[in-house]
Length: 119
Image 1: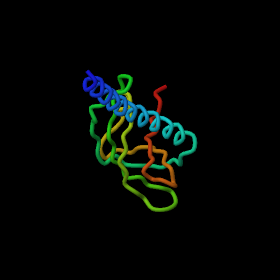
Image 2: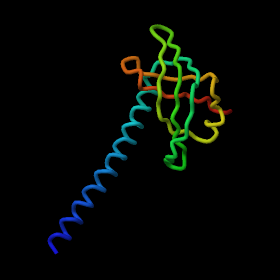
Image 3: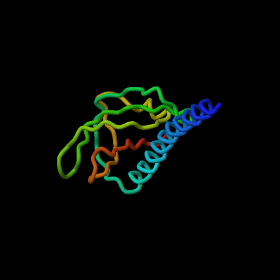
Image 4: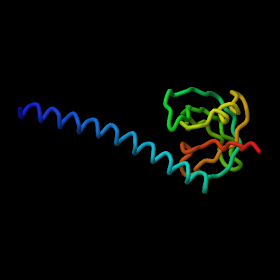
């Protein structure tokens, strides 16, 4: 009986740990995107590659984007990032096509695509 309780508690601990990591990662990403949206530096970019990750958050698709970012001052850079996007935003993405992005100049791995809203 004691072994069963111990196994059950270990299993619950592992499951909570995995779920907690996913939630922490999701909320961290959301906080980072809000920060970039408010304080990020705008730059032009070109989409080099696009992959679906198979992850859906609130029925929105997460994609992995590889982009060449052309900064106005400093060095251009290539970055990969995951971003949750709507299907209408997905239709705006074309490999080799131009993008508008916001990035953190202190950490160029923090980049998000800025989508134009349809009027």
